[in-house]
Amino acid sequence: MWRNRTFLLLMTGEVIAGAGMWISIIANLQFMQSLIPSDTVKALVLMSGLVVSILLSPKAGVIIDMYDKGKIMLIASLIRCLNPVFMFPALSQASLAWMVVSLIVMQCSAAFYFPTVQASLPAILSRDELLKANSVYLNISTLSRIGGTAIGGVLVVSMDLSMLYICSIIAYAILTVVTLFLRIPAITTRSMKEKVEFREVLGIARKDPALLVGLINNGLITLFLGGINLMILNFSEVQHEPRLMGWIYMAEGLSIFAGGLLAKRWVGGKNLMASSTLMLVFFGISQYGMSFATHRVTVLASFAMFGFVVAFFFPVTATIFQKRLPEHQQGRFFSFKSMLDRSFFLLALGVTGVCLDLMGITGYLLCIGTLTAACGVGTYLYSQKRKLDIRATDEAAA
Image 1 (tube, rainbow, N blue to C red):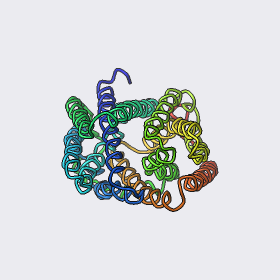
Image 2 (image 1 turned 180 degrees about the vertical axis):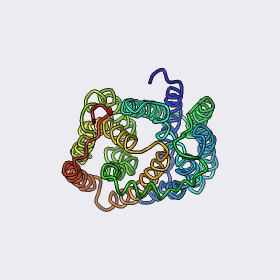
Image 3 (image 1 turned 60 degrees about the vertical axis):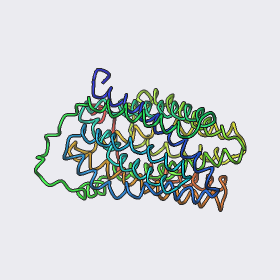
Image 4 (image 1 turned 30 degrees about the vertical axis):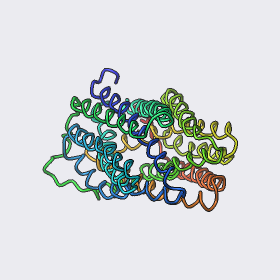
């Protein structure tokens, strides 16, 4: 895997682009904090780009399966470079409208780029390397997030927001150059002249219990993650400490990195279905810990626990999806999953904003923690009843 040039280029691009993205996110949050007092209104602004990406996802999945994945990522990277550009008129005019345009451009790029990366891994690596590759991918994303939030946290208190967006543009431009050198093999298991339809993947997802359980569990965690930036901003306001945002991102990021180093060793030989469902219980416990919103150490420790479990959960679920589906359907499936993720993000932003305004952060976290733990127990019992057993290596599953 480490000798695979295309894989190394994908990971290099992820480090650079991820850092740029998180610098931009920190800048966006700071920009909104100065203009919008209500969490609900902040959520509505963040929701704007997600609507467009949801509408694009079905078409994106078909395009990913039919055309050269390297070229798709190149075009998406070029479009992403425009995202921070639109924030300059937003800054000069204190305009939320320009910020909405920026968010739409970012989500349009993401609707193509991220499903393409996930669909490309089975094309460039062996099936037995997928769990390790997904763990590495998560670790790389985490490193870029740690670096991006750390840089963004320093710049946001020492420089104008425009400098943060310039850093993002530079990062996205470097990503575009890296993408030029990607070489991803074309899929030959299906004639490219054959009509490729998005809805056939919907039928497969409904009929396969493993895919169904994976999508349910993934959707529940995405429901929480969709509002996490609003919650972190709220923690910062409750404790009257602007720098707490950076500390929370760092605690979560470092624990994801630590967990990612152990993911292959701890769950590599185990039933991935059982592991992924039980992880939801630990997610619920971490959310209960976050409900102690005024206790800094408890909040940081809970985010660290959450990040540690994330390091196991997302590589495991991605591996389940990749091993259950043939290569010629993965572009459409991951676009379908991306559409679901963005739908949950959309719902999460609205729900989180309203709940924070009406219930407070403690009440919301107690509710979502109970729901997460209960869902974990339910899907575990269901997977045991259906005898769902998927292993990281084909030999172990035999």
